[in-house]
Length: 126
Image 1: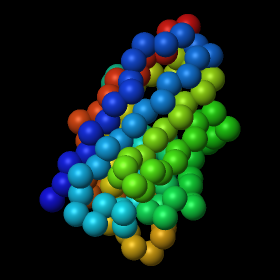
Image 2 (image 1 turned 180 degrees about the horizontal axis):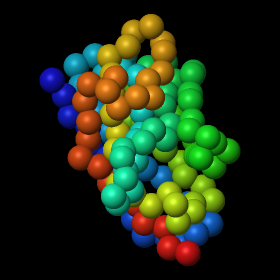
Image 3 (image 1 turned 30 degrees about the vertical axis):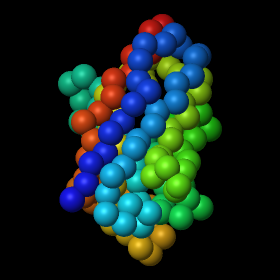
Image 4 (image 1 turned 135 degrees about the vertical axis):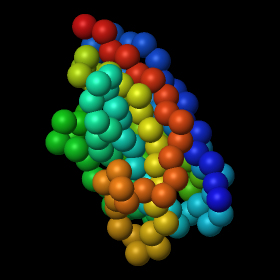
């Protein structure tokens, strides 16, 4: 059982930055791989970034590579997503998700995740 709560979304102009936060209240939260997904209006949910439970392995979708950075604060049970150089196509609801994974791997598929937050909206105007 557990809960994920996202925060930090908002309205920004193209080229600006936003920092999203995912706070977890999960049993043995430190051994969960965590990922950020996003869903634009009328489109399917897609992978954005992932990090393993140790915080030493990350993975990014090609569309955000070089602009987004995912990190983990184990003490605070929080995963952060720093988003720079935002584009209008980054607009959507951003979801945090976790999957129990003590092996140190990362997860990037919707069907592989066990828990989901309710999402935080991000709007990037041109």
